[in-house]
Length: 168
Image (cartoon, rainbow, N blue to C red; front, side):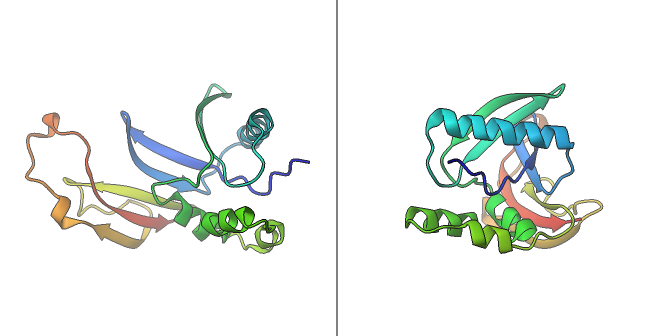
């Protein structure tokens, strides 16, 4: 029988098509959270997914959910670090235990959820020295070797050169 042990909703921030950050623990309505939970269960049942970590992306427009991506994997872009910071759950640990035939229910039930929002903001070559307003930066990583000479702003794509974790 299917049991959804944990659902973490991540708010994605975009500029055009480029991801510029994510927030775990962002406040959404209980209706949208329930819609995400219901859709996740429908997808798991419909695909025959047996065990593991499932990464789902939805876009919510006018209280309707539209599926963007389904993948049997842990999320990327350091989202797993945000989930662990917020909920005390290592998705990689869960995945390894599940594929070894072990349970994760007790591990998840005993995890301690922290208050607040935990996020990541990607840094781009022209904003590396700016702080995230209203948040406390807990870690900043800038790969200076990745910062190219800059063409005029209107001609450059968004290229990540680092990131910072924060909480609020």
